Image 1 (tube, one colour):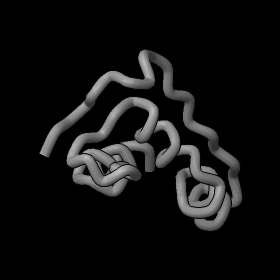
Image 2 (image 1 turned 120 degrees about the horizontal axis):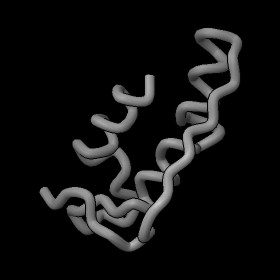
Image 3 (image 1 turned 90 degrees about the horizontal axis):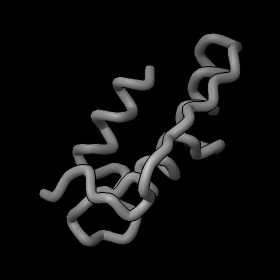
Image 4 (image 1 turned 180 degrees about the vertical axis):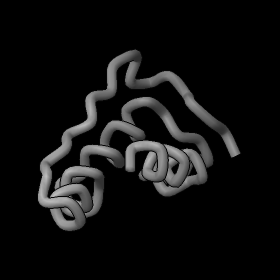
Length: 65
């Protein structure tokens, strides 16, 4: 599940400010979103709460597109 959401985020779903790049901070926000991220879907599909942990410089750019 983490890989699915991570790759989807790299494709642009995690680009919250629309600047055509995804930072570590944006990825963290996307992955840990309680309404549509991993915590929500893992609980809905598998009845197991999961909360991903992202560490590092929040301003570092992961991908530009």
